[in-house]
Length: 107
Picture 1: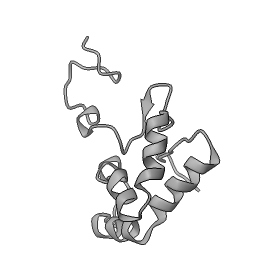
Picture 2: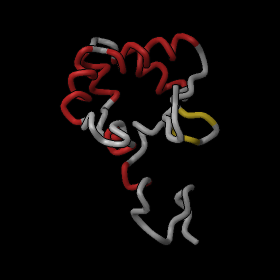
Picture 3: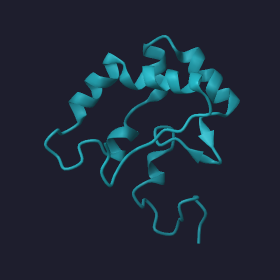
């Protein structure tokens, strides 16, 4: 069930999806989220919270750095130039620069 806000990580194949599922559902990830999420908030999981996840560090912690590196080398972690939320620099979100559009081009 989702409401008016949801976050989606698209993948190109089931192996990539399985790896991301493992990383995002790992105990270390769940403990981190439990520490930074405010359960009583209207939207406890926000883009800011998700931007704090370091997927590369999670992969290292779980011994999956080579598997993740293979997807990064293959370019499957991006789709049509749209990077994953967790890999994009945080300055791209939240209107850090009013003279930039979403693609990063100046007006």
